[in-house]
Every structure is written in C-alpha cells, then in structure tokens.
Image 1 (cartoon, rainbow, N blue to C red):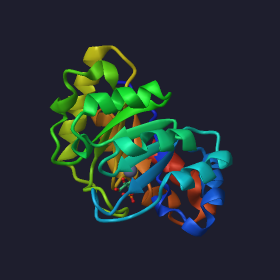
Image 2 (image 1 turned 90 degrees about the vertical axis):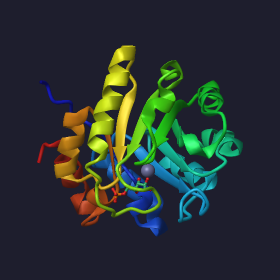
Image 3 (image 1 turned 90 degrees about the horizontal axis):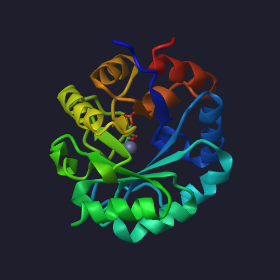
Length: 222
Ligand code: DX5
Ligand code: ZN
C-alpha cells in the first residue's frame, strides 16, 4: 500500500497572537501547505478566538490556502464575511445550522471549497446522500475548543469509514484530521486514509527555528 504524503495545515491557535502575521509567514516558509484558522464563538464551543477581520489581516501575509474552521453557530450569517476576508476553504459543523446542504452549496457559490467537520460523537453518515456538494471533510480527533488535547484513537475507524465514502465517489475530496496530531498519531491518521493534517502544538513548539523540522516530522520525513 502506497503511503500518501499528507498536506500539513498548521493551526494558528498555537501561534503567538501578538505576532500573527510573522507566525503565518514563518510556517509558510517552513513548508506548510495550508494555514488552518480556528474560529470560535464561546457558544458552539467554550472558547472565543477570532473573526473575519483577523483573517483579512492575515491574508496578505501568505499565499497558501487559508483553511477556515468555523466553530460557531449559526454559521450561515458569517460565510460571506469569511470568504470576503480571504478564506479559500470554509468548514462548518452539521450542528451549526438546520440546512447543511444549503450552507455547503452557498460556500461553493461564493467561490470557496465547502467543508464539513465532524465532532468525535458525530456520525458522518449525515453527508452520505450529498457527497457531490462536499469538497473537504475534517474529522475532529478531540472535542473542539482548545489546542493541546490528546488524540482520540476512536476516530481512526471514522477516518477509515469516510475514506471509503470518498473513494466511492471517485472525486478528489480532501480528508483532514484535527486535534492531538503529532508525528506518531499523524502516521495512524494517514494509514487510516487521511490526506491532510491540522497541527497546532506539534508545529509551533520550540518557536520559529523549529517549524521546518516540526512540519517535516509530521510528514514522516524527519
Ligand atoms: C481545536 C482546533 C484545533 C486545535 C488543534 O478546536 O480545531 O485546530 O488548534 O491543536 P493541537 O494540534 O494542539 O491539538
Ligand atoms: Zn481546527
């Protein structure tokens, strides 16, 4: 079985928030493929982070895609603002609104890749009948809200199940894992079928001199 080299998406949640532009440039220079932006509202998850203005401020600092993970409810009223701010990919949780399909179609209609995010307890069958409207799937391997948590191995079987759903479509839908990803759990995720990995703690530990080595280690190349 050939082993895919995963896309690495550093989560800026673990960056120095007082120097976000520099941090974004540093991870891009260190080899990051996407920049993962965690948006939290203190309602859908028990933490508050950033809004569209910060995405807009970061946009000129990087050329890699901005992978915006919305942990907000409702999400629909803010989709246009995040797209206008420069989000290339926008992912929403099914629990964030009553019409997941309508929301995904709207994300595509404004020119972004449409992503669905599953909490550890969420059954991925919710997208079974609408795979044509999905560009990206994100599996949470922690309960969302905070960086630095421990990877939940229970999610590996879900990653494998979603891999089968994606393969059945014959389309190039990305499958990303978020939470507690380090070089060891990264390997398990890729073996289960993931093509992209979010990492906060594992990328930003040690500061800028370490970013390239940290990213290489997640790819399995260190
Ligand atoms: C948590 C966020 C994650 C988080 C990952 O709700 O969605 O992106 O920053 O952080 P680590 O890699 O430290 O688990
Ligand atoms: Zn995230």
